[in-house]
Amino acid sequence: MRDSPSWKCILSTVAVIGAALFSATASAALAAIPASQDPTTQVVTIGVIVSGARPGYVPLGSVTFTESNDTLGTVDIKQGPGVTCDIRTESCIVSLTLDPAYALGPHAITTTYLREQAGGPVPPEVLTFTFDLSGGSGLSWLPAVLDLLSD
Image 1 (tube, rainbow, N blue to C red):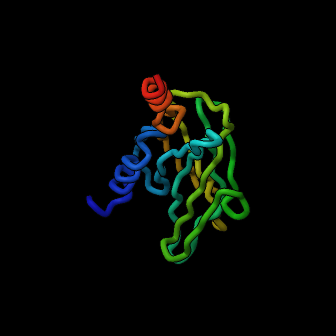
Image 2 (tube, rainbow, N blue to C red):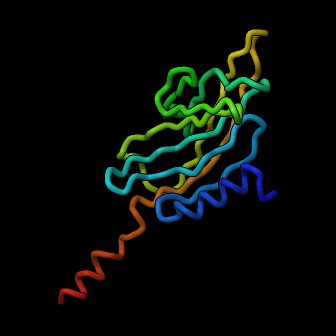
């Protein structure tokens, strides 16, 4: 359990508690990574790890991110920005940068991985994960404290 991908996500979540709370359901080919928010630009990045379907190969295909049937974006694993693949782990990290005006609060994101395969169509892998966007760096109390100190 300690070395499983879901345990690593829980540990990573603790590190970004100020920016986003996060949970995920398990899937055979997909694993969610914690959402992150740049404290300066307020840009939110979400993503998944796509595991290879065949030993020795990184995944091919595309990942579509949706929320409430609205498509947030599609990332092509072969050429998309936000893709980092590692042949040693036979996996790719696929991430999507959201608009800085992305709404605060809880979000349920569904990712659909359409795998390319020479033998014909393969059913898509689907993963739904949630995160709660807090909208700041976790330091919203700082201006009030500085006001008190300056008085």
